[in-house]
Image (cartoon, rainbow, N blue to C red; front, top):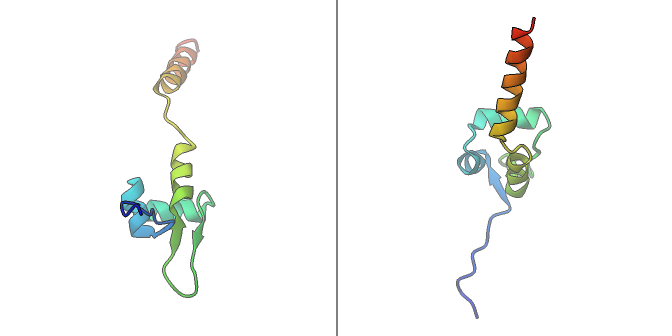
Length: 82
């Protein structure tokens, strides 16, 4: 029997989610209000977030520096051309 199995928690409270994501709890509340991530409150307990869903939310908007720079250059060219 393998005793080195690590079980990942499926849900975490806002403090867990903040540590895992690097967002402040206030930002997580905002994402919940905006419907960007879902939260669950089983019974009258803590507010819980599905940590896999949080990971998917973070991965849904990868930062592409080249695209960002291209947009800035396009904006500058438009401004100069006016």
